[in-house]
Image (cartoon, rainbow, N blue to C red; front, side, top):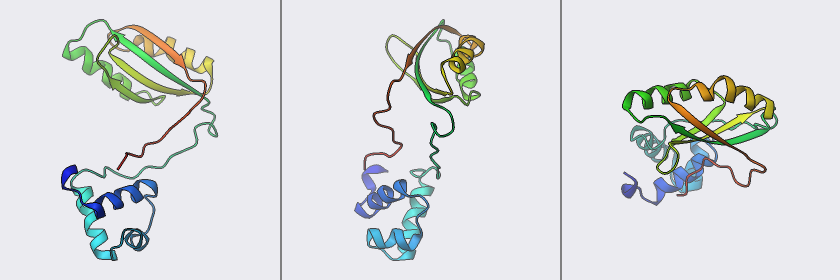
Length: 154
């Protein structure tokens, strides 16, 4: 579908991911379309699954979540059941904000947010090490957030 997008669609997506609360009239004015054609294009993008919803970004530090940990996980075995159970366990942990299945020396990379190092230690001991199939966990505490965005390059 991406190759079928014209410049109007790309402009709508660029602006909309920056400000999902923008009014249809304002969005249309920015991309050079009237209300109805802009609304139709936006609806088409939603129906095609390109727009999966709207999200609100919260300031994690203002909420007391000052520690970001990148975690590398190795599993003992790689059968379908173990992978499904591990991934289901990950889904239940709100502190795990991103998780990727990866190729290479590890099986998964996760991004975890916590209040402090003690909070992470509790999560590690009580939860992460007990997720199905886990054989090792390597933790990397982030010193500084250089870039953070959910916006895609369009």
